[in-house]
Image: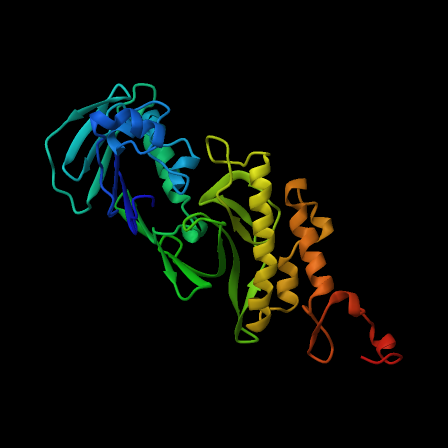
Length: 345
């Protein structure tokens, strides 16, 4: 995604994993005369960066700055092979790039990861990666800026997950493995002074057959740092994303002030989405079931989202009343039929 790829491909064999992408940013190498300065400025060439320890060419706007990075592949391979641009090389002993013969592939960048790590049996490596590939799901693509298609293949089965941007808010994702297409309302807001980093929320849409129209439905909401953070639980009934500061494994977020700021930006985006939801006839009882309530027992980190939603409904005209108009919650009552006979609307 950082290389501005729109599609990527995984091919799993019993001997290794082939990874390809069509990113327009190809591999580069640092100028030896400026390498020290490049390190200081985080502008190392790609080859120098992935063969270095604790140095990266990832900027603040890069997804790659958030996680464990390229070194993760050494849990499975000792000699990764990379073919990109005019650079064709293997990496030996974690940090030593060795030039290899060029091969022509359909994609501009191809990486091959042979299962030759003596601490990981090939059959175990195969099963672990197969499990990972088979778990790719809709929100893997929901919050990526560039990649909109992922192919993955194993045991002669070719599967594809693909995102279709219908308009600024509506997104559909087709998953050939499950033979399902899911539809989403996705809202994004760029961070102040950034054209790349953003917070986002996604509500799931389903067709109501009786009413013959789409409605927003509750789901087990997940937290993404571009990709889902597997151990982070929001208890919200919709997905959220932010470039949170995370653990090295990217599976949960840290308890730091910067993340509180991002959480508050998500909260602001949620209440701003109500205007669109109201204007497009999604603001009904089904949508209310998507929103958090006190009994959900949100973690302390996420509770400000609940408080902001309550305050918004109390002060803004988002409650549908009997005469089909909207009023703030603090101006209306929930009445039984008997009470309705005694008071006016």
